[in-house]
Length: 230
Image (cartoon, rainbow, N blue to C red; front, side, top):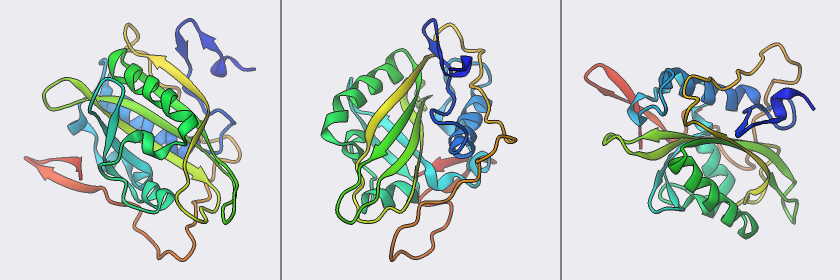
């Protein structure tokens, strides 16, 4: 096992679990978060710019903490809606997961906001009638609200395969935890664009019309700046 996938003290390096295939999408989201973070503990939500997420906006979502261990989805790109078969706006984050994974999701939500910590998940959606097995990755990166509290998180998800019959609930195969306190200057490892197998085949939803890569996220201009808004 390479050093990039090993536990280093209390820090887990945030690299892809199975190699390079999903790195361009998840890596792009992590890279923008790290850029606006600029060696601080956690960036503000309004610093996240759609221009920095071009090409992956359909895979982006934002969650809001509503209690110690629960968060709800504030906005989401088209990819999550296609996977669940409905608009996920306002849903609890746990609603995306199968019952066996929900306690683990709650533990991770608590750590993301309280430590704070960045999380990377390896996901599976099991094969069943009308559904082929899907594999993918999710990342959750803490954000400050306009009030300065750490109560938002930037999320990204990509599942590889034919969605088939929705909803496609997620099972957590494994996850990596990276505490941020005391290491605010340490960046997330960047995806290596030269590694083979990095071209992502987008998930295709049967009987669906082509969607904009921006999904449900849009640019909002405020005093010359742009931010993500529902």
